Image (cartoon, rainbow, N blue to C red; front, side, top):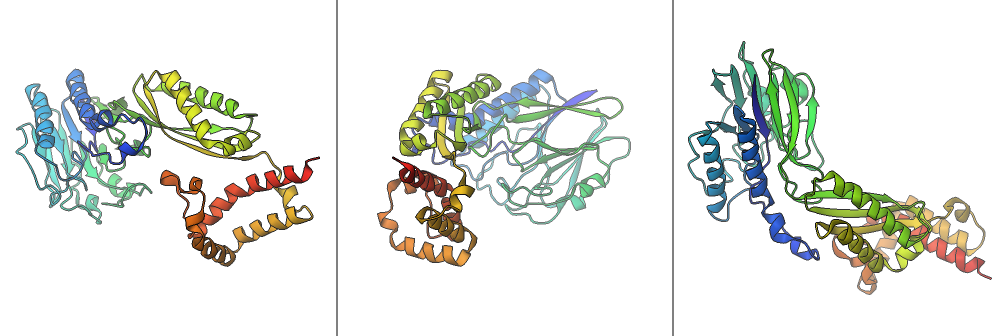
Length: 421
């Protein structure tokens, strides 16, 4: 038996831009997280006494600001050299051969596989063959796996590849391939990088993404780390995930359907934050809260969004004792209202409802309204221009989305005014 580590997408010293705009963000702590995750990776390799470490691309995040980034990586690889643990890596799109304007000679235990063609490293002690090829430039569009050699007979064969595989909406389609392309090589394990979400492409043989070692923004939620692979004498691979991240991003979705008031919503958020906090092993958290659903609390939330946002921030501070930072609160509720009955009501209320329905159904009408609103853009209330969620009312598609959100609130208020004694 032997063990190895499959890691990828370290993105050492990733700049994590625009953090300063978020009130209370622990900027320096987050920016140092990729280094601390690498420290954890090296310590795990030492503790597990692995035979070798694989890194499936993107050790770096592009060109270095100075040599400190490369020196830090090399110093950690020396720790592995002292324990006689070799490291095999390939370049990805962020650290492709033509991306790095600075470089350092790697320690003797680290081997970077070539970028111009596939190569094979043979470890006779373990009966292992590692096949891989890095990126020669930052946008490789061809199927690199197609040129990989067939499996070495009698060996445990590993494919090391940076690829979008079948594709992901969050990642560029680099070195695309199908799982049949990989299976045809008859390898025992494929160690993939580039997609930052950990996942299994195929179960037998094992074709897996390790994900990145540290989440860097709110689109990279959940536990991040590496895979420890144990190989038995029958060449069967067992895989377990080991978290390495030191700062975690989470998305909390709260259903406010049963909430009667803003305080009920805050209580629901608190319950979800306690659950997330319990699942993160006391790591610091950055949380985005999204509150949705048709709710009796909508009127209160819509009337004072700043107040309820701060109520949510306060309960997060209370629950996590300063270890949870609310990255953003999105209040996206709607009134608890039967729109169908309102839509077909007689009189001005029904006419308004039908007009909104017509706008949503007819792109030409919506485009005309968008043109009219563009002329009034500078007079719009500030709430429509908040942060990253600013609504571009010159875009008909975004306008339709805004109408879906506004219609229930508008009709609810008008109905209440109509029915008032």
